[in-house]
Length: 270
Image (cartoon, rainbow, N blue to C red; front, side):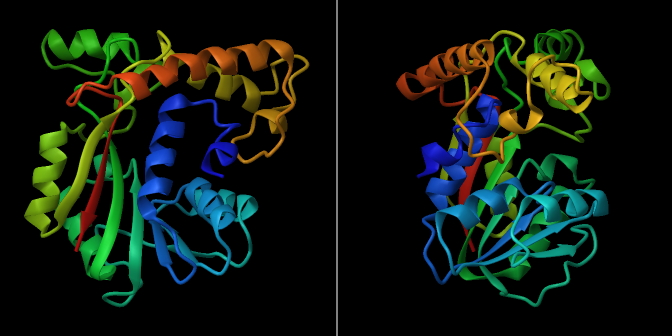
């Protein structure tokens, strides 16, 4: 089920993050799940396709993201604007599970934001979180990898921003674990994801996304490449590119360094 849902996701790092989050959630029909920083609704879409009868809510500070999400998900899923730097519009202990993927690195005060996440979780509830890893592989973002080691500099905006794009910080596995424990969470699992990747992978994904948005990929239907699409039909060259990317990504199932990766996944309990 999860593999089929993710078959049209061309960003291998996103695909691996989503796979771990969906597996870690151990979804049951009575779950009340909050997606924090839901963006365009990707995780809400995935979760709603795994099991029916769930109570799903997405929240994001960016109203434009919520507008996009509404187009991608069921009208039965609630979407609410919320600010982690203030107070989310939910009572304490409202949810038994929460997803927070690639959000903490954007927060001016990550501890304050995570305290608010913990507040809205029930006692014993779980948080499924990913953040970009500070110890990312060279191939993923060569420019920032070199700059980071030559004076701790980064490109944080524009096409070449890579893994640092609009981020306040990146995390080592130890750093995000320590931050969550400081807030009061108990860590159940923490692991780095995606060591093996295509050279310049981030730039390739970024370029293709921009070309699709501008409709400049001749003969390619943007909908066919949408991560929301269930269609498996792709042009031959695109299909070959997917197979190569998936083949390289499969190496991560064989060997993954414990402290190096594109992302860190953590399952934590209140």
